[in-house]
Image (cartoon, rainbow, N blue to C red; front, side):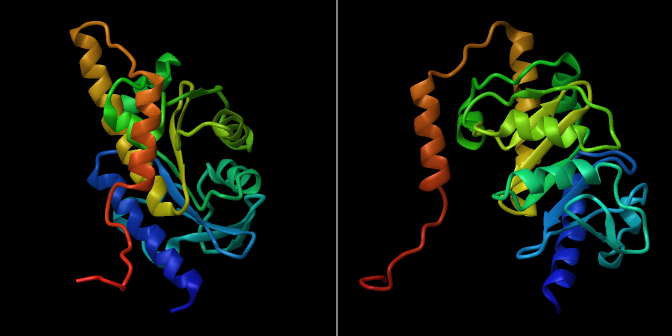
Length: 226
């Protein structure tokens, strides 16, 4: 299988994760991936049911958002994704959802405050709010880049729209979308009980460093390994 065929299959499969975690309804939302070594991206077609998606349905576009290969029109968010890839070369995956709790914070135009350890781990601080922008151009992409550049969060709440997440690859961006909705829900519940305090900055730094650099399975040297 070619690398592009494999990436098409991966992007297609990752859309099922959006359904699994309750992040999308009907045909809303999308996952894209940068094609390594090429000025191309792979993204979901516009308006096609998740149940009907196949790897062959995934469309290939250039980094201006123009269709290069595919039988369907690309997602209406393609130009936004393409702008992110053009201006954030470290990004290999972009996800957009209308997950309900994160979108509720976006509707208020309010950042999600970093008040629990899970937020320090994954986001390294508050989840910020980006500017309102209409769909159908790269305006949303500009807002994403302007908001996230220099920020540790892989998620942004585009005002009165919903969350966008980025990652080193498409799977990482999907994980960020799942975690964004999880902490948005938790923080919503917490605020119903009363005022919520932010974590101290030094605690956030420590949590973020541990989770990003130590947490999980680390490669071991063969020398002395048992």
